[in-house]
Structures are given as C-alpha cells and as structure tokens.
Amino acid sequence: MTTSPSKSIFAALLAGFALSGCMSAADHRRAVQDPAGDRLTVGKVQREIRVGMSSAKVIEVLGSPNIVTTDEKRREVWTYDKIATDRVYSTSSGGISTLILGGALVGGGLVGGAAVPYYGSSAGAVTTTQRTLTIIIKFDKGQKVRDFAYHTSRF
Image 1: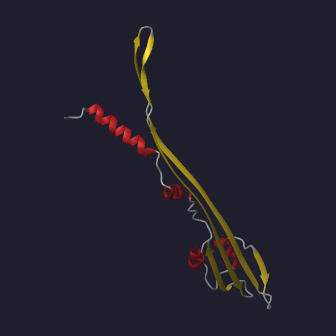
Image 2 (image 1 turned 90 degrees about the horizontal axis):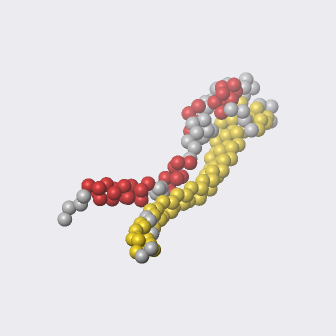
Image 3 (image 1 turned 90 degrees about the vertical axis):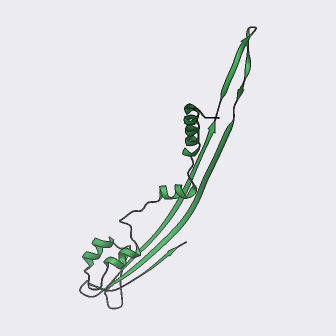
C-alpha cells in the first residue's frame, strides 16, 4: 500500500501545526530574560575597579552611588546598594481542531454528519527571584580608591 503525495503533505502539515504552538516553560523564561550589558554586577566591579582609580573614573564605570558618607578621618565612602526583583510569567498552548462536514440532500432535507476531534496542550511557569548587590568603595584624601568590597546574594 502506497501513500499518495497529497496525503503525505497533509500529514506533514498536520504535524507541523501540532508542534508549532508548543514552547516549554524554560523556553518562555529564556525569551523574557533581559541580559542587559550595562547592569551593575560583581564581574563588572572585579574587572573595572582598581585601587588608585579616581572617583571620576568610578562614576564613569559604575554610575553615581546610592549613599555617600565619610569615615572617622573625613574620607569619603561610597555605597552602591542595588536590589532587583525579577518576576517572569509565561504560558503557551497549542492544539489541533478538525471539522469535517458531509451530507447529502435526501427528500428535501440534509442528512449527514460532522466530526470534530480536538487535541490540545499547554505549559506555563511563574518564577520570582530577588538579587542584591552591595558595593562599598573607600577613598583616600586625594579622592583615589584606597579599598573596595562587595557582597551579592540571590534568592
């Protein structure tokens, strides 16, 4: 028994439609994440901040600090305190629905039937993540970095 080319094409199209709407929850999560390159990260601090760097250069790299204080010797201490909350909701669904109508005119009326098979599926996910990053930069009297520290957490 051989399959006609039109039946093969129909079967391929049907399979394509069945799979086209299906994204996993992980696929949705990747689709909505923001990999912003200018975001303040520990890696940026480790790569860019150096002892002896000027305060102007620190602002150029990290931006303005959240808090500026002085220590017991009246030297500036800059604090960058960042908190971010990521909430991702993603859902998808897909399915196939077929409607087949057929019938015949018999004695002035329509006699026939209809078949309405349906197949559907869906997937979804909700995640909430919080990140914190605290950077403390201590300057000397000449406004040069004399020390820096950082702490990060993710929960």
